Length: 279
Ligand code: NAP
Image (tube, rainbow, N blue to C red; front, side, top):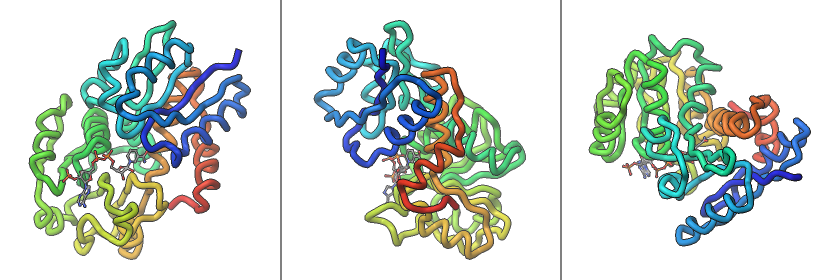
């Protein structure tokens, strides 16, 4: 019998997940469908109960439900619990188990480009939900230093103090981040600056960027943000958010099927749809 999978969010029409996962189900000859579900906040409880009753194999959760879904599940994986957000649910014999593959997916994508992170100093820009998943996952794998610059500095302080994994980290202001940019090997941009309507904005000046720095922006639409364009001009290596999107999806697919799918295939599927080539 065909298995049901899907993604729950509001809005959801823009999601690339159905395209990516349906291609994988076809490719690996798994009899399953992955559907987008447009679910408003007030419908979330019923939607989760409904998917459970229908025997869905699993589903993804996206904005704005990643936190609200947690009390509706039967069990939460420890990393997702620490992060405080779930993006993947597995139906294990009738029990719904919540995971967070965003942060580990990001780290998998990053280590494709920088295999050893342990001696790297990292500056993370932003302290929202995505930043939290990335910060905890990077702290877990271990980096030399992991500072945060966020517009609202109190949120950066909170994030650092709530991280269950030990890491050398400071919350810094914009002036300090810009002045000391050359101290960092890797800059990770996690805010919505660079996406519409902020296409022409930079979260900070790259004037002091090191020539051999690595600049990673988790936005993938557009594939090249203004920050990445500026970084390229300064001879930095760059990465857009497609790797994170692909690897969080690959880890979810593995949780559902036991198969770790081909990330290159997944990337091509999304790139074709977005009409561009990855940085
Ligand atoms: P979020 O929880 O709402 O956090 C937003 C972050 O952006 C906060 O740090 C916020 O700073 C900052 N910000 C927003 N507007 C700003 C502005 N005008 N100036 C300066 N800072 C601003 O959102 P999120 O879920 O973390 O998502 C953030 C980005 O990550 C989005 O662009 C999203 O598309 C992307 N994302 C990508 C993937 C992927 O798979 N590649 C996955 C998830 C998210 P304050 O704390 O000061 O408000």
